[in-house]
Image (cartoon, rainbow, N blue to C red; front, side, top):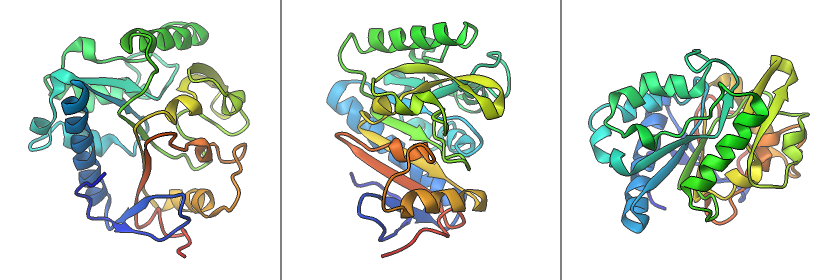
Length: 258
């Protein structure tokens, strides 16, 4: 799909579609334009737009951009439905809660119906929260396959994405669904979409910024054979859509070019 990104396309392993931007600001503007394009196409085709947000620090400026003019006016929020790829099992008003961060930065500043926002119910026990969110998705999609228009993902320095962490059972999950996972290094439960569910999205967009991510991004994109146990982000492969990486120059500095 064409979009208005001004990034430089790298010639890397042909499996990867990566664009590199001179600054984080340019990356975020390109990501906002990409989301707007996908939203307009989805609404024209199906009358609704489904987007899965990611957490962490990386997408926060993107969410802020989407809450501002001119981007805010270019999305039909009444027909936009928002979900999350993963969530920390912390109180709903905890600053570490992905949905709470998105609420403060984006959702409180746009005119979107409350019923269009599908956050993960982390006020419930983890396994129950995962089960209930999976049911919520099935109800929303009316028992058709759960298939999102776009999923935003980040990349952890340890190779995780969503809450697919190295050494956890969920990275070996073959079913499309929502799972509770205990992350030992954080001593915390998280709720996450499984890789097979993420891979069904029409568009998957990784956002990777900063020199701290250069080593892991290089390892993931340079490796000739996948190491899923070590780098779970390599599990993400679009089944019938496209997978795109947006990185700034610092994050992309160790990617081999061919």
